[in-house]
Every structure is written in C-alpha cells, then in structure tokens.
Length: 109
Image (tube, rainbow, N blue to C red):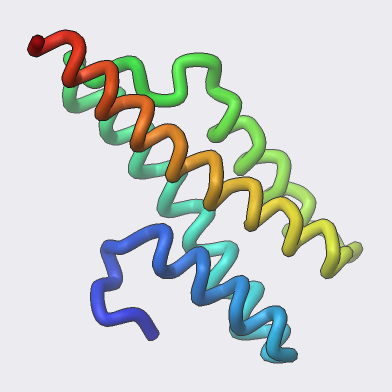
C-alpha cells in the first residue's frame, strides 16, 4: 500500500503496477478506489472552493471516470482497456494540476 493513502495518483499508479504484474484482483481494486477518489476529490474542490472552480471545467476527467466505473461494474473487464484508461487518467490529472497551478499563478500575478 502507499505510505500516504490520500495521494490519489500514487494509489492509481499502484493499481497499474499491481495489474501489470499479474495481481489482477488487488490491482483492479486499487484502480477502482483511486478512480472514485479522484472523482470525489475534484467534486469536493468544486463545491468547497469556488475560487478553484476551473478544475476539470469540461468535466472530461469526471465523465471518463464515470464511464470507466460503469464498465468495471459490468462482467466484461478488458485488461488492456483498463490499463489504457488508468494511464490516461493519471496523465490527465497530472496535466490538470499543472494547468490549475498556471492559472492560479496568472490570476495572482
């Protein structure tokens, strides 16, 4: 497990690593929990901090998470698709964090 359970991306990448190394059940569980946590984290930012309402403005990240969670709830679990989607999510959240930092810096400067 990760040292910091609140590090959502670490949990996502842990799930990816577990899944790639053949730990299917634990990897999928980590990915499922990480996706839901990222979704909830973004929703919390948007509802509790109006100044940061520019997080995921087009709801692309949250929409993709919802689609993936629905897919995972089904019986068909395409391992390649799960890995691809989790990699996309990690990269997208990292880019979103950087984008928000740039916007905050511009707003303050």
